[in-house]
Image (cartoon, rainbow, N blue to C red):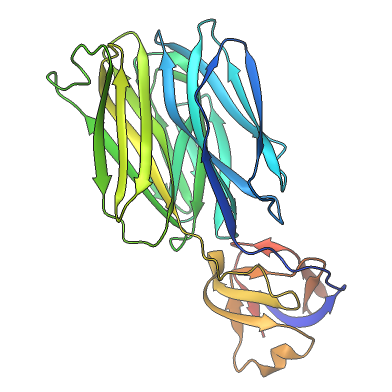
Length: 342
């Protein structure tokens, strides 16, 4: 699509916020009733409502029949509501971690599936996920990434699962560093042996980044026992990623998988210059860029400029004309079909 710059409209009042994030691990809760609602407040308000990535870090049930779901609602600049739902009679203990992000390089979505295959859009292959809802009756729950094709991830769910709900985050490789870590143990492992207390193991991996925000979640488990008890805990960064995973009270954990995500804040990324439209060569605000601050700025371009993402300041719009067709660009778009500016 070949378009030329036409006009910028409307006066700006404020600039967009800088990239911002906040993370928190909530206390474990035991669901006795069908629904529990928590009001979560951010330490400091966001200027724009963030997206919320949420992970399951602890699951404890006395039987292999499970039914629960976690929802995020009423997201605003000051906080959100965290809703736990239980679909079985027995109590369920859950613990979650959440990451609130205002960053146009990152997208978060929630998917519920009643089938064994789930197809979700992701940015290239750079994504992570966690289970945040389950219904079924089995000692094994798992998800496999079968393939990634044309911006979609094809996920295969364990046959015994009737319903699964995932929270999926994807985005720029400059912002997100995901890793999936599987565990499988033999019969003489502490997870399998009878244990009256806790049986946790430490694990770590190298990650050469500065000051990451870490968030982890459970993505797979298999138990030999009737009871299901699994927890990911003590996730931290000390020149490498460190964490613990394990079980307790005679639950026999055979295998598991967790997702670990490191998010990097780019504190220099301001969204956006309050008086200028910013156009980026690649999706997720990568590659070469150019600014259009007033009518006539495009005349200084030596060649046509192709862009796949853009930031238009709040309370302004950017109009592009191609003969009699006019296209209006507003807000923030992280990935669009290629547009050519002449």
